[in-house]
Image (cartoon, rainbow, N blue to C red):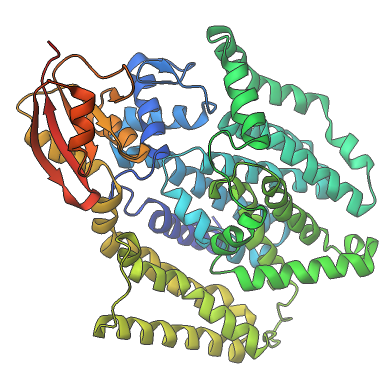
Length: 536
């Protein structure tokens, strides 16, 4: 193997292991989605079922099956653990990074390593690589498919077009028809921007369409046959209704994804904006000349970055993970921006302006500062002006100053090297210093452990007045169906009950004369534990 190639692969492997796999189990599953998806995969594994996702034994048809398949494999290899539920996302993020490197090495070799490491270190990529959810499988498969399409556009190699269809099919298995829809819009806009509309028709390659159908359709057909309600639940409710209404209570303002995109593109956001502005202005002024001069990739990446952000801004339901399929385009756009500024042999690297270098330095250390003070954000307390906080501020200022000064004096060639320093520090701080706080205040893992300590033998478990995060989290960590109290649905058998703090009067009305024994509390999450007697 070429020594340069070997060294690049070793470096990328090391960064992927650290950024994506390090600390996967340092804190428990967070939110409602992580434990819910993890439990669905566990139930499918227990039933040896590769078709119907279930939760609590009932069909759970909100999302397609790719993540569940991957998690089942991870469970089969490593056992059922919360960190094993996150392995698919870490693996998919790594696959995406290596695909970006391979794409750039074939077509933009001087910035191959830069572009791949920029993709790997974007805040949104690092964050969702640690999540047991469907977002990263979609983003990775979609990114690889879009890179494969552009490789075909440049070379006309049918193998690249075939790869486009295969990975687009996998993206469709990850999250549904949104993947081919976004791909069609991006490619159509790029074809129009290039003045070569016939490219869209050339993309409709019959063998590729058959490949897409062979990969994606068998599961969709099988799950529809086994569960006739699948089309209504998945397509009508969790795609069309989710987009057009606030059915699932994720209402956000129209501009919501603008700050989300800026934050998830850290630490590269300043150069993403600069590259995007330069590309957009260049296309507006030169149009066809950009494509003839070899700058078409920048136009393609800009369209790819903007389309998901704009499309999901139109949705009535908004969650940060929705725009993850767009994120890789941002760092890759920066790699193209860097390539155009690389010096000739023995030449001097172009230097950014002092303002640009300084602002980049400040924003590059923002994830590190946020990581250091994250425990205060979690417990909703103001950051105290302690010696430690002052030292952190001075350290962050020094790093930002060093980044800005180095860029200004040595040029843009060192952009990747100096920017990765605060990224590594931020991830290390989150895993080593923040994990305990995140686990204590946000995960159901310690709550389940406290319940295990209190009960003399396994009991059914019910909840009242708690967040969905707690309900689904307890479902995974106790591996049992959690019964939420509702009108006429209170379990008649003896059971344990987890409630929000100070619900005694409400419980008295709900339970009447049934015996209720207070067992204890979990103060960090304001939860109380009770033992409720059997209904007479």
